[in-house]
Each structure stands twice: as C-alpha cells, then as structure tokens.
Length: 128
Image 1 (cartoon, rainbow, N blue to C red):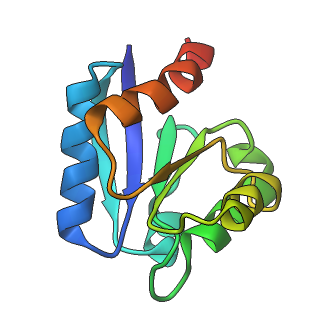
Image 2: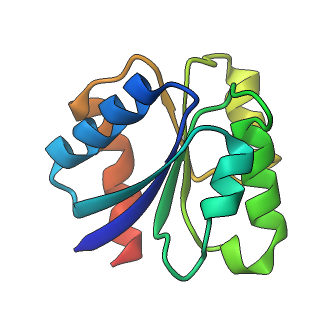
C-alpha cells in the first residue's frame, strides 16, 4: 500500500524523525509532504492527494489542534486520518484531540517505532 503523508511540525528534526519512523514501521510505502505549522499545512493540504496526516500540537501561527479542526470542518477532509504526534501527555488533551478536533490517533513524544506501529496498524488497516 502506498500512502502520501502530510507531516506537520515546527521542528525539521522532529519531522525527519517521524518520517524515518514511519518508513521503519513498514505499514505502507510512504511518501511525504512537510509543513512547518498549521497554516503551512492547510496551504499544502489537498484531500485528493493526502492520505494521512501526522500533526504536532504546539506550533507557531496555527496549532495542530486548530489545523485538525479546520480540516474536519471542510467536508473534503473528514475521512482522512489525523494522528496527533505531540508532547502533550495529559488525558484531557488526548480527549480534546479526539473529541473536539476529530483526531483518529494520538502518539506521545518521544515514541518508538514499535509504539508507532502498534497505534497506526489498526488505522491503516481500515484504509485498505
């Protein structure tokens, strides 16, 4: 399976880490589009070309939380999985991401390839 992933994080190092970890999961053949914040992500988001999004919560200009809400508000982005990849570890933040922003998954930094695989496997299986 081939997936085009939009990876949003204000840290280039973290975007690279997420992309390398995704490749190591071997859940799909990933290709990537990078965005440095939510505004950049919205500019690059195209529901016909993006299969899945990996989004940091805390970014300048527009947070990942707000990015997810805006994508969900557009009818075209409602079926694209959004995975929050963030250092926000509180249960309240996790619930907000899922309930208010419409995220499909939540991965806490730092993470391992195994954790990423475990949390993404059911999401990607639903996409097949």
